[in-house]
Length: 198
Image (tube, rainbow, N blue to C red; front, side):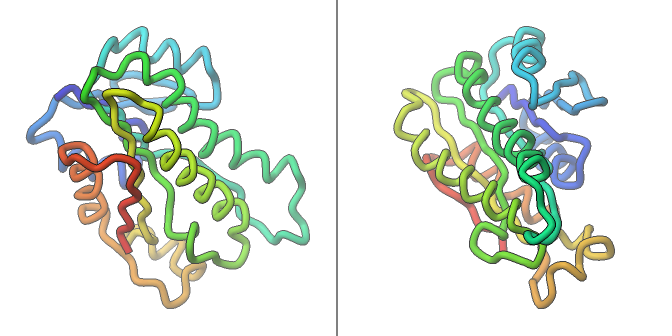
């Protein structure tokens, strides 16, 4: 299959490429590097991405940033960062990408464990992830001939040195294990499902 991986240069993205690259033709997409570049916060950039690549069999998003900070100090502009990047970036990918995804193809988006298990300073992340999971649940009913799922990973083992203190008592998962959930979404039959890798 011709599989587009957005965020291919990140820790999860690289693991997805390693996992799927043995069996599929991968198009690596990044904001500043990769086979093709795209800014998911910009409609024109996403449209240009698909104009360049043409039709694909699967679209996998392993990207998106949110704002971390105390709720007592958070501004609406800071909260909006996560809405525009991780939430609307992935929603935009589906809104535009559905017209370039072959029949029988699939979308796989990325949420995270904070949807169900909030941490201190993670209000924006929890809200964004929950909205994405709601989008996947509803969109699965309105993509005729196409599927959509999401992967919700816990903190990555590879990122524990940087993020471990923010996830006290959480079990980590290796990026290679997380990547298996993207394969399951790509090659399986599920629709509207969230794969929790915790």
